Length: 162
Image 1 (cartoon, rainbow, N blue to C red):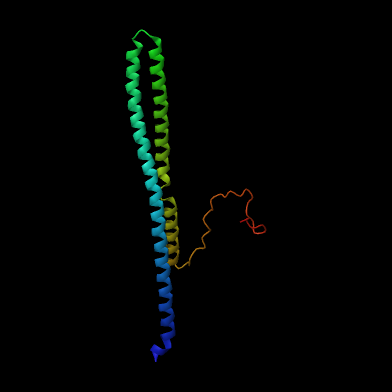
Image 2: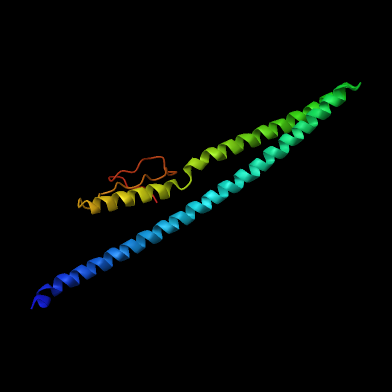
């Protein structure tokens, strides 16, 4: 008798658990996909960092070598040798400075690695925390959209042009 009485509630509970499990799997797959995309971005950044670092080291080595040659040439008699060596040193020095600038810029971008994934996981943890505390799911505000090429802002009265 009790089994018949509670059967619809048990069936509803099982269906609810199935939906929650399906949603959990969907969210997990979404987070794994996001992690893969951000890892690809991070790998590209690290590859550019490596190439820039190699260029900086190579050009700095050449700059030092030519600076030494410049000192030697400066001791010789003709002034044209000094001007030519100084020009080469200047060009290589500018190249080395550019490479060092690129390395610093890429290193500073490392703080942004996996930022979207970290933000999504933090929102997921907050939602789980609220559910655990019995407050129900929080209504999250949508993530800010990147700026578009369209100069006018979107409003409900004037939908964006396609």
